[in-house]
Length: 159
Image (cartoon, rainbow, N blue to C red; front, side, top):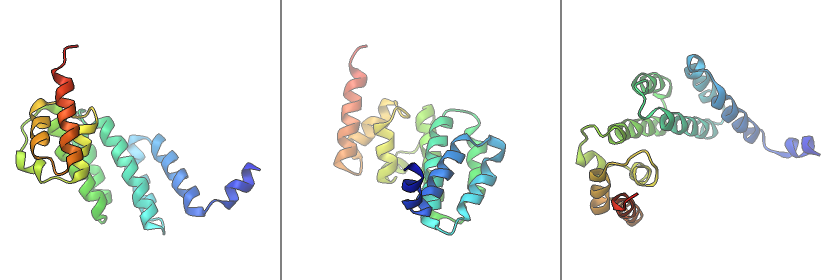
């Protein structure tokens, strides 16, 4: 029965699941080659989606790791023909100083995409009160402003 269900599933769905599994367990030394192979898939939208999920997962893991910069440079060479992926990796590069509490530019944050602002306020990647305050005041959407306000309120609570 399982094999019948699997055969009824569209081929691109099976490939997508296969790519996600392969990307989940790829060795760092083989990551760029595997990403390049995935991006050569005939279904570009599916391939970009799989790679996007992988970039988000890896960036989340590496965001505060010194290896992030070299990883991001290596990934940028592989994805440079895909605007969405290039933009997403750029956004992760903008999130990094926020996560590390390094200097950052307010206008970069206020001009950033809804995705970046939402990620900053709805994950534990960013905990700096000044970032949350700015997004509570000047976030692009009500959702971002409310989430930032909520996170700020919880940061102020003791313990």
